[in-house]
Image: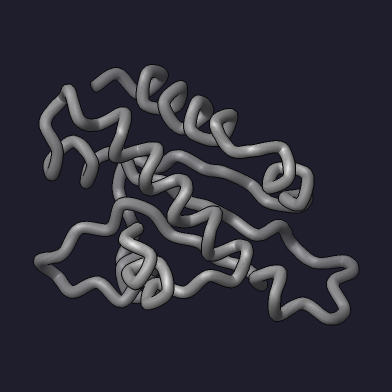
Length: 119
C-alpha cells in the first residue's frame, strides 16, 4: 500500500474519535512508521515471531500527577505488520482498530481491560 494512503487511514481513524476524547489528547503525537524497531518490539513485549501493529508510549492520563515540561506521548502505528497480517480490503478497519486501541492506552485502559471489552 502506498505510504500516503496508509497515513490517510491513520488520520481518518483519529478523526473518527469522538470530540470528548480528542479534546483530552493534547501533547500526543501520532506517528506512522514502516516497521517497529527492536526497541519498539521489546517495549510492546512482542517476541521475534510476533507482529506489533501499534504502540503507545507516554504517561496515561490516569497516572499523571505533575505533567509540565514533558515530551509528548506517542502513538506509533506500523504499516508493514498491517500489510502482512491483513487482506487489503481489511486494512482500513484494522488500522482504525489499532489506532483506537492505542488511544485507549493514553486514557489508561490496559490490554487486559480491552480484551475483556472485546477490543
